[in-house]
Image 1: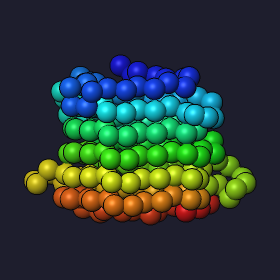
Image 2: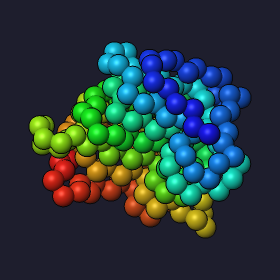
Image 3: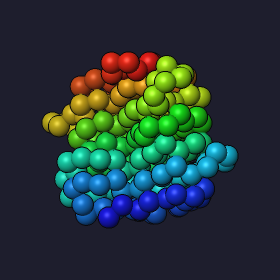
Image 4: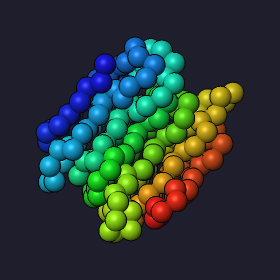
Length: 177
């Protein structure tokens, strides 16, 4: 079951003691879906986990949402850890001080796409800082960070350990990075 947020909200936990755990192999665990501009949604000090093997989708997915901020969260056993997806122009997406462990797909995906101006870039004024993305020793995470569309993204102090590709910048036809 997906927990869907459609309004501005602050989800604030107590770190490793505040667990959101899924028993589903697919479907986003937490989906932030198109809340208004400022201040956006804040997700802080939470632990996301799965009791089953994930085969698709995200633990946290910010879909066409302005100002999503994810801080001090831990994500274990994901398919994709965190996503900024959707079909509208997005600004202010931030991920700071997080750990994404044993993702079967990708740690962080930036794939917002908007048609037309500004040249199909979907994400601007993004910030990813102090994030550890690590795969299992025998089952590496395929991609640490996958950037498919973006106009302005700052990436600082990222570690990708046991990832086959640490940073993938691969715009689709007609997209801009």
